[in-house]
Amino acid sequence: MWNPTEALPEEFLTIPSRVYAEDPLWHPEDSRSVAAAFSAQNPYFSRNRSWVGIKPGKARLAGFFNPDLRVDNKPVAYFGYWESMDEV
Image (tube, rainbow, N blue to C red; front, side, top):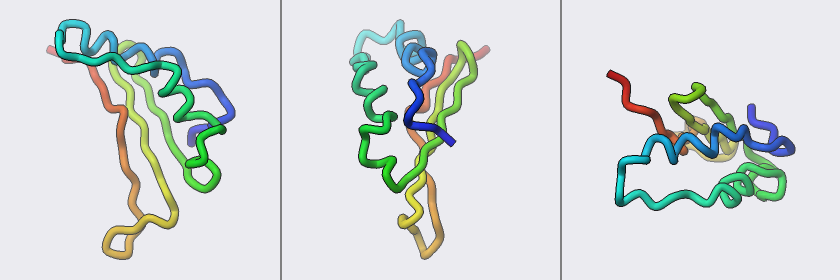
């Protein structure tokens, strides 16, 4: 599980600029805003949990879990911040 009292790994913040380096339409993220979203100052973490995964130099992904959120009366998780390098 992600510990929101820790700083996000730098690579989590830099992978998108590598993934979208050749995309002229990419609108860069604000690293400070992303870091704040994963911090203890975000009220989301008062009750919910997150997971952060990184494959160095290749990909990032985050999962989000709210214990009260259910679909068809079953607990669910959601994923985002999913960027990955193309591999041949």
